[in-house]
Image: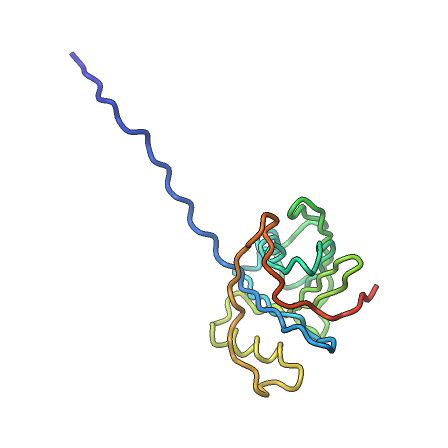
Length: 173
């Protein structure tokens, strides 16, 4: 005779926490900046990295509907992505010699924000130096605090964090 013993239902493994977005925004100021922040993605896979970064932006930046990236620096991506219930148009352009590896974000009616991209394989020390240089508009290394981009997490239902600073750029289109 075979007896069956009731067993507890199998437990599902807990999902691994997602890596935090490494994003540091320039402080809000009265004058326009050439760089509005620094983004240190975990990989060059635009389809996975871009939605996480867009979700971590301050809500004051509005809905980002256009993103321009360096064509040679990122993996293949379609011309559009659906992110946070909206369409984001992706534009791939050759890198400018004056702005290597930069991501340009466009929000209709609110403006344009330029983020310097730190290569995913950069060391923490290199990321700190690149961040300090990018966010100091006076001159590289002049009193800038050498810190890599701070990890941020989402705080509201749309996945946006509280405003941490806003670019003061006027729309350029």
